[in-house]
Length: 326
Image (cartoon, rainbow, N blue to C red; front, side):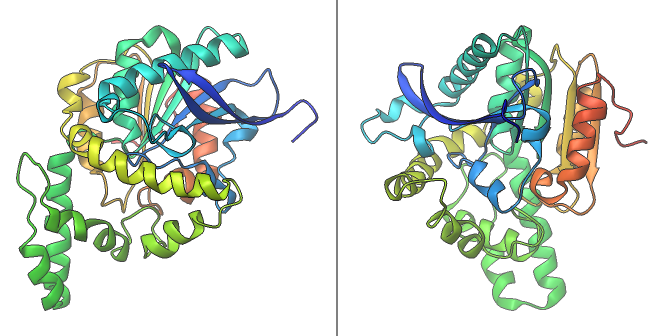
């Protein structure tokens, strides 16, 4: 990064509480990108140390750690302050902070997984703040997605003759409208990763792929590493069901900005075909859907070069020339 580049870890008062963010980019003149992590409650910037995305060579990126997550975790925060609507309001306020700091009328917004619920609702609420919306593993009707993933994994277990997995999955069927049963929640992440449809296609274990690396991450102090997981556990307890219950096609039938959706072909965590269906019915000035054939849930970590090409040639140029055809 050149002498004019930015690399800053800071906390900003958003919605009445200090919230953490990492800012990095090549030049003050670069376009600004706000990144909304998933989880809920799991910041993602620290993952880019092992898997660089290249976003910071194209944008000034704000890796915001959402209310209650990572550097934004505060043990004294009231549980009632952690809601989907509050996170949406926070996202708009962070966008305003970035617009003011960097002198931009509009910024770009990229959201991943659970962050896409917040991102789509934020752009729906305040489209005039944003130049484009990029959804990575876009959530739409997550309770339907969970049932699809369960059915696929049950079918795979039966085809492999794995009686133990078949028995456990059969007893953990997610209901059509939620809430998700504890049996399924105990199985889903491990089963999805073992099947190659989790965080990345080659990550077979959340323990070795995420938990253990986070506990030695140089991006956080020892106290912050503990808060990372305190925030994750609390956010999951207070936000997951509310986030999964959001019917994005019903809440967001139109967006007043270009929309680009990036999705891994092997993703079991979020349904590809439900994301594609939402985009097909969405009223937006420009739309593009991009399938990543070598990715599971995180194309920005798994196929970063192609992501950067899409951002440079389509998103920043107001096109969808590289999107899927047919």
